[in-house]
Image (cartoon, rainbow, N blue to C red; front, side, top):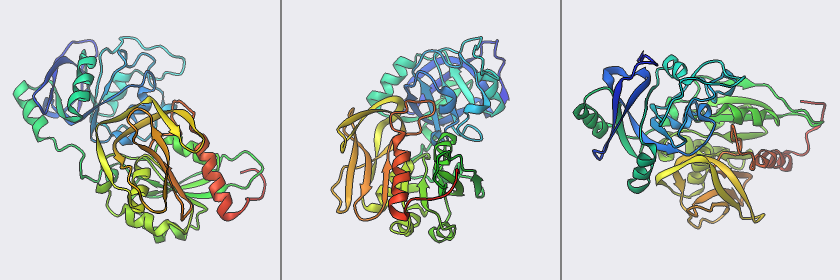
Length: 379
């Protein structure tokens, strides 16, 4: 992809697979042959666009931001959630010509150009969001190519159903994150399975101990060779049923070590325990979803990013712990037979809200319940 001139208006269009057309202007990198394709979704956050763009869970998708201004406070390297963006494109209403923030290192357009991500601005994002809410997320194509070319590309785009998207974003080899534990407990030794893990999750886990991050294809036996105190199943993109070997790996861990899953990790743990998954019409993508903690009777405002969900089926040995108050979908489960639990939403929530970060403390307690209180100096 080459760069587009940030000060020159270059006409572009977005065409959805159902033939709906939106006119706009190109920004960011110029896609090959003037066409970028992917599954079009929308996100309702009012800040944190950098964290969304660098979240590997958006692999294969074109993200529409409902907030009208995108890029007004720039981009900085400290807030990246992964090594690079994996999404297919960005749709915005307006890109301000100037960005302003003391932490900013560059502007959004330059960042997208650097990483080869195309964008389209000037779109009526309210109309687009309403359309997706009515018809469901669908493939689309945008760019400077003619409408017929974009329409054909949108129809040909396969979307994310049934694909192993985690394999496209996982790490190539294991790596370690040092413990940042600062209390009087010895740090835990944890394994994090990378289905598309976010940096903020690793920051939260590091407060409990050292973390070895392993690729999504790692076998249970290999994980257990590390003698972990706990295993974390990360977030990630796409269809949980498409992730090759994941349920077999998780089945080999259950009962051997405490397990905690988030987002895709939650769906994969649920599948392993017998709860089926299904695709939501337009997914949950935003930072203001209310979730009820059924045990406490409290409501948490949560950050969410998923197109697939776990069915509310009755399965022996599985308790539903959290429910989405918008649509009553399952947001959390725990096993009654082995030390394992998971949530659909993002308790790490970079940049926020942080209502649910107590779940990392719950993982800490689960490891303590199984292994006893760790002793020693500061981690």
